[in-house]
Picture 1: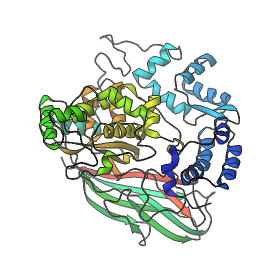
Picture 2: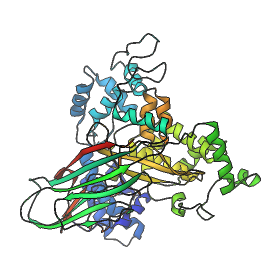
Picture 3: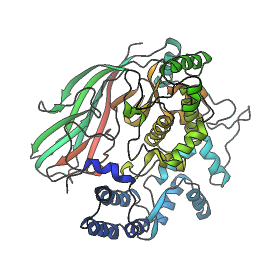
Picture 4: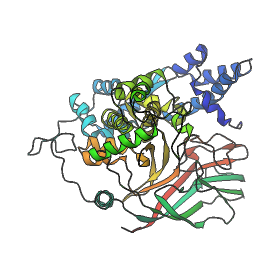
Length: 511
């Protein structure tokens, strides 16, 4: 395996030559890689050379992400929707609820076909499509005329009280909620992939931020490790070992999570933002020319804690394309204050973008625009869509990700941050907000503009950043780090070649 050129990621926006693109669109990935090697032997620009090196790896991800033939995908779909006809299956394809590409000239379907449909059943907006095409019977109605399943009209059914819901209530009533958590991450190379040799194992570790404090490493699988600084862009603990026998690696740590609640939907908040924003940026006639009150520019004066890069493109996935500029203008062009613009972007994503499992992030060439164009995406794509649109209209925005949990083991999750005066850096979780919208929970939907919940393990305060110290070869996820990475001296392992266990060891509610 060749060492990975991390800066090549920025070249993903470069177009492919027609002959290579034709092979890719037909799903002739062997032919595509053959042509890429031919082109790499020519005198070409560094941008195209970088694009081709990355594209060669993307082709391998695409083949793995779309394993099912038509017959296999139909069988998977029928496992969720018994009796689904071929005509109904085709309609779901056309509606974008079943993802597919060509592989060797034939339709092949994504590995998450069943998972996406199962998710659709749980939410009113996408369930209505299933009802419309006759894939499921109409939901029963309750006494108020609203669907007894989760819906977006009428009064939603009472929810079972959970730790998470109690915490949200405490945040609203007390202004914050505080917990101490003890977390254990374990990674083990699959026996089938293990071979003796020099191995580097990177595990994610909680990073410091405004709601995380008192971080303590409590235990590790070895006393020899390199722990990245608390504010590293993507925080890891690195174990490096000459392995002769396979064994697990682990880190156990403790931290306190204390998110503070901000009600951004009140008239008081709107007026506070108007006044504070006017003091920061353009006001009066200048505001009209700049596109609103308090619009910030990367080359202008910035408030403390905001960097120029929080307002600029970060290619390839935070790109100010004509489409994204047009969408930002459509959503916010008649609005003045940063808060009004942030609300409009958030409203659009939570109400119009459907949560959907997607192919590997590495195989999507512009994740923010992909989500906006297709009006579908998972938590990370929705966060990048929000960040891109916010930056276009002059709202500083950035990434945060890691894992989230409640009464279940930790699982991967991504969200966004935004800067709004007078409060500073706040949080935005469009996918949680979208889930609340589809469930008819408006108060909860509004909560996730400006706020999180305590049940987060942030590890990555930045997107598309190398580890410290860096990996040599291509990471399974070169943009983020939520489950760990492994590499030998001659190459890295794929996600299927190692197993990660994430465990909430203990939690203490501090109030």
